[in-house]
Length: 368
Image 1 (cartoon, one colour):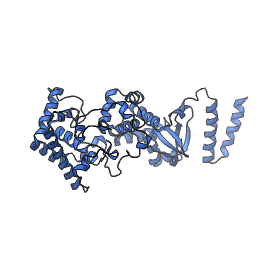
Image 2 (tube, helix red, strand yellow):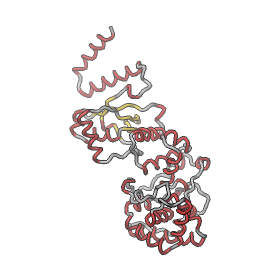
Image 3 (cartoon, one colour):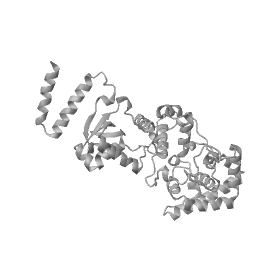
Image 4 (cartoon, one colour):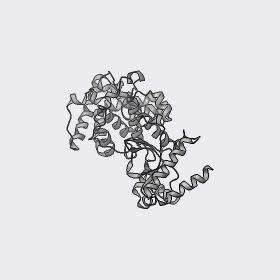
């Protein structure tokens, strides 16, 4: 009895305009979803939404190279949309949680946009996942399942989750990482320096703050900690430091951890050698310098020292603990030389030079 009645109702859709028809179909699907035994699964209700109402999030760590992007376009062109875009509804619009590039293809490819009449297929993320931290974690899980994510963006997301009082253990569990990976992502953005009570120069030693000290951060700090609008960003594929081994977690072949730290100490204590590497660094590592030296919230002096060592010898920043093997006078000499080249780079790039006191600031505005 119910099926003939439904058929009669659906036949009445023929006389509706396109937008009215889509609205009616969405409503029917929503009602069916309410009665469905699978209504706890987002994919049970795929809704068609006009593409101007869908916008990207500001934290997506997924990276698709141009050839793969073209392949995605060809796939959607040939096979159609086989996967909906995961979204969250907010103030009449929808934020993309997963499917950013599928959403781009539907907006930017004229043939596909015409074929789907300016609409895109979406599903709604579960209500329990609408908090920003949970949305970020969901985005990461989707991306990591496909094996694609940007190192820099992932590290920024770890920082954001730390601000929201997520422990290392929870981040690792929710993002599908191991503990070491969480620590490496913290190191990329300098999180190891958060709330350090040691002298600024001691931040050359990559010490990770424990979770209890990180709990000091609360929601009121988020705006203060937001990124400087004047920063220059480059994706990790463009950083010269990345292929040079700056983030490697292993010693060079034939070297032990102790030997690596001793080599670090010897390099920094040889000021002439250190200066020659700094001269090369600010010229040869253009993208890395732009990315890191425009970040006023990190220890740029420390980064210059670590990067110069990596450029000189290939030894990674992981072994910068060799800095603490220097005498106090040697530490100051190394700091001052890195500070000199920080200002050389800033002035050469039309930025304001710093005073020594400014470079040593540990105020809340320069928290990491």
